[in-house]
Image 1 (cartoon, helix red, strand yellow):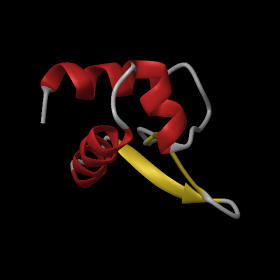
Image 2 (cartoon, one colour; image 1 turned 180 degrees about the vertical axis):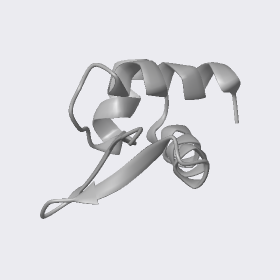
Image 3 (cartoon, rainbow, N blue to C red; image 1 turned 30 degrees about the horizontal axis):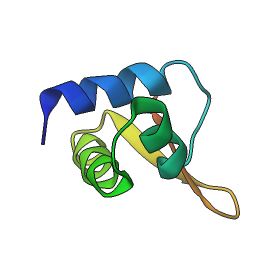
Image 4 (cartoon, one colour; image 1 turned 45 degrees about the vertical axis):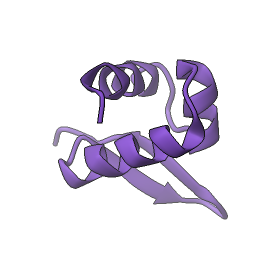
Length: 64
């Protein structure tokens, strides 16, 4: 997965409290399927986390 895409995702998520994957894809100008894969990788690395509030969102993981 592109390091540039991963960085764009992290930078965008730093500006919001939470976001849906499709909103992240729109914000970074990439296809949703690529963003889904990158977010899954970032989640496995502990950099982002999924939260579920009637639907799923993703956000930066708290550093605490």
